[in-house]
Every structure is written in C-alpha cells, then in structure tokens.
Image 1: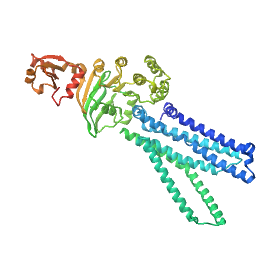
Image 2: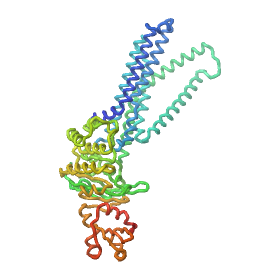
Image 3: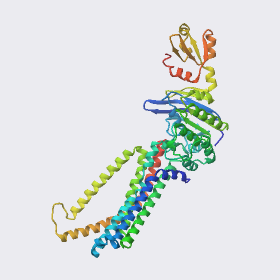
Image 4: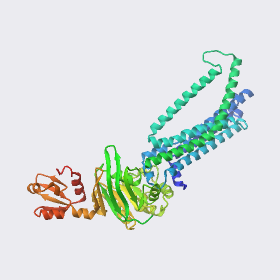
Length: 260
Length: 294
C-alpha cells in the first residue's frame, strides 16, 4: 500500500479549523489552570489557602480535574466528522470511486490519520498530567494515567464508529442521533448499575447512616473504584486497538459493498 | 495496459432500479475516437456512465475498458489510473484552491504531471490561490477538465460536462478535447443534451432512450442514412407506418423521419427530402411509439 500524503493533506486541511481550535483550547485551558494554581501558592490568591490540609485538597482537585478536563479537550482531536459530511455534500465520495485507490487504501488513510490524532491527543493528555503534576507538587501518579487511558478508549470507540456510520447512513443527523441514543442508554445503565452497587453496600436513599458506617462505605467505594479503574485502564489499549482494527475492516467492507 | 481496439466495450449491460431498467445495452467506443452519448433526461446516460466508472454495480452484462474486463477488481484498479471522469459539478471541496488540488492529485495518480496541470490553469486563466467555491460554473468546469487532462489519461468519460456553459466556454473546451485526441491512444465518451456540440466533434454517436440503445454507430453514417421527408397530407396518408420512425403532423402536412433516406427517396421520388440533424433524429426516435405527433 502506497502512502498518499496528498490524501492525508486533504483530510487535515479540511479539518484544520477544528484541529487548531482544539489544540488552542487545550493549551489555553492548561495555561489558565496552571496560572490559577500558581497564584494560589505565591500570587494574589495565596490567602485563600489557610492550612496544609486545604492546600493538599486543592492540589489534588486542581490536578485531577485539570488533567481530566485537558484530556477530554485533547481527545476531541480525532473526533471530527465534518470532512465526511462535506465529502458527501460536494460529491467527493462519488469522485473517490473513480480514483486509483482501493477501498482498503482509502479507509487505511482515514483510520491511519485518526490513529495519529488519537496518539497526539494521548501525548497532549500526558503533557497536561505532567505540567499540572509539577504545578501542584504531585509526583508520579498512576490514577490519572489510568483515567487518561480510559478516556482514550471511550474516545476511540466513538471516533472510529463515526466515519463508518457516515458512509453507511450518509446523514450526519442519523449519526448524531445514534450517538445521543448510545450515550443515554450507557448513562442509564451506569446509573442503574451504580444504584444496585450502592444498595449492595447498604446505602439506600432516604435513610440516615452513622458517620463511621459512611467512612467505611466510602473506603470500600474508593477501593472498588480504583480497582475498576485499573481493570478498565488495562483493557483500554486492547479495546482501542480492537476498535481501530474493527472499524477499519467495516469501512473497507462498506466501501467495497457500495462498489459491488 | 495491453493492446486494444476499443477503448470501451459494453455488452448486454443491465441494471435494475425501482421504476427504471437499463436494458441489455451494448455499444463500443473505438480507440482514438470521441463518442457522443445522447438521450433525454432519465434515459439512462448517467446510470450507464456510473456503471462504467464503477460508481455503481450492474446486474448483468460485461464492461471492458482499455482492453481490460472491469469486473475484475485488479483490472478496474489499473483502469482507474488511466481514466478521467468529468461530472456536471466539480466534486471537490469549495475551500480548496488549485494549488491544494495539485498537492492532493499528485499523490493519487501515478501519471500526474504538475507542469501540464499548471499549464492548463494558465491557459484557462484560472487563479491558483482562490478557493474553488468562488469560481463561476465555467471556471469550475475548466478546472475539472484541467484535472482530468493532467494525468495522461487514456480515456475521458464526461457526464453532461458542457451543460450550463455559455457557447464561448463550450467551444474553448471542445477545442481542448480535439487537441487531446491528437494522440490516437486517447478516447472520449461524452454524454450531453447539446447535440450541436456532438455534431461538431463526435466521431460516433450512441442514442439511449428509456434504458435501451436505439442507435449506435458512426455519426456520419447515422446522419447520412437518416432524413426528413416533407409530405403533404395526401402524401403522408399514402405512406406505410413501417417505412418511417415517426412523423410530426402540422396543419400543412407532415415531417417524416426515415432511417434509410436513399430507399425512401427511391420509393417516393415525388416527396421532398432533407438531411436530418442529430437533435431531430433524437426527437423523432423519442416519439417513435406514438408514431404521429405534433
């Protein structure tokens, strides 16, 4: 298979506005969070932190929320489907069937670029983790690394499904509707699972519990949460690889079927 | 690419849609020539062209292009390197400019020649940095033709490419096609409603109506064999319907299209006969089932 730099240039150029705004937003947010945290240490906001306990809590909160937010922004990079929409609008998808590129080559270029952007998003997320870790004085932490991997895995699923769905459904509205339905069903299932899990721990709505019991439940919650996160983080790279492979295969088949 | 006699050979091509069937059509485009593919809207021109280009599949029949059977995927892939498609609208994003298109296409076609492409841009006075969305219809068509002619394609397939263009631009484009055909390994299939253009440049003509090929052959043979008989009402009444394609009835008499003008002249020496133009032939064939129309 020949690498067609021009084909990749086309995809990048047409999605340039979204890519630039995503990268720009990422760095602006990272800079703002870092500056606010630095100002809390040695700037005008220093008086807000009264003791070490508060400082530790703020450090943890800024580090976790900041890294999570920056990671979510970075993973917008491989999400763009605007090119797919405009391909249909301007009839490039019809012209593409007349050019000497096989269906496998076309989907390899699309998913290859997606993978490249996904890796960039991963690097940016780890950059945010390193910067905020340094600003907040937190050393090498594995929890946020696991969170980034899980966010990346979920993102891979969404961003890989979209181009194939666009080729099959041809309407961005349908794809968005499926996204929405999938998100709603996932959220409902997660809420249901969480409720059952909490019930199992003895937490039910409308009942008062002792502070000691609450501490105990929170400790179990923390342990279970970290254990689940660890499992998901181990699974995430495999899921990501499988998702990229599966949707590359499905798009190739979809393009070949349309030609047949 | 192997040696071949016909740039396109279509045999028994069939494609069914709900409400339309491309019915067992066959024609061939000799290498080094230009064929006009004519027919009214919905006759099946675009379906045929899309089948040739592999944009849609077909239900039956075979297609050979540049000597290769395109039902074989590898052959189709090889053929795509040597064919160019020109559509009625520019199939490129409006944000792209001519320079961007050069960057994209030079990696897509092995035979892409940036020098030829930019020479065509200069010849057509097309700006290199202006987004194509700001081009007029004529400029977009010229750009599409510049792209089509810049990778040394052996076969140019055009679907209504000159429709909607003014006569000056159309003439300019037709001249370019004639230049392109100077190399006798190159061929053009050109679908159009504008039969006057085809009359100017086509070597052969295929006329499709309602999914069926009604006429195919060398343009001069078709024009030479067909003719219009100018009949009075009495002369028309004496004609046998099997002798003509269809007749246009007016208050003064009838204009009758015959497919063998020499035989008609011999059989009816008293009736005045005129040569027929392609659009007249098309019109009379379209009305062949009604036989008499006004």
